[in-house]
Length: 111
Length: 117
Image (cartoon, rainbow over all chains, first blue to last red; front, side):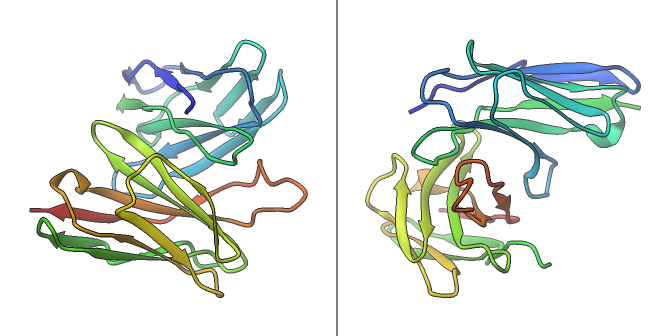
């Protein structure tokens, strides 16, 4: 069972602020890392799938980096907007093809 | 393309009863995974079905079981319900690309909220 930690647990920012969260996971037996955004009353929405050390992905104002050697990934949001308010989940995938989710970072963006 | 659908959306049961939840994957997706989400434990993997066979199983008691049909639709069953089974149950489907099996995206349904009284 993978030990996946996300920090911070929650974050309150003002509209326009840039922010970042961390996902830490065991670096052994790593195959891929998934990031999801989960808005209240909606389904989790896939953001990125990352596999290679040094990988960087971008989708609009959201980007992510991956360090598989030390076992962490950062998610950045540039110029946060109220619609970015959600819980952001990371999930590493091992050889068993299971996604193990972290506890998530709950982001609240105040207008 | 229609997304992942789950039925029912809400369910109230009493302790000792059993329940069956249904998940219809995105058309063309052959893998269905089930997750349980509780406030204390977060999202936890239950099991994955692919080509009507259980491929992976999480750390849950045998009261939790599932199956997959030839059209890839999946059902999850919980027998002898306990209060602690109250949770949001999510299913997710993916293509399960033979060439890139570990990087295909899982698409989640809206979930079934089960309350056990």
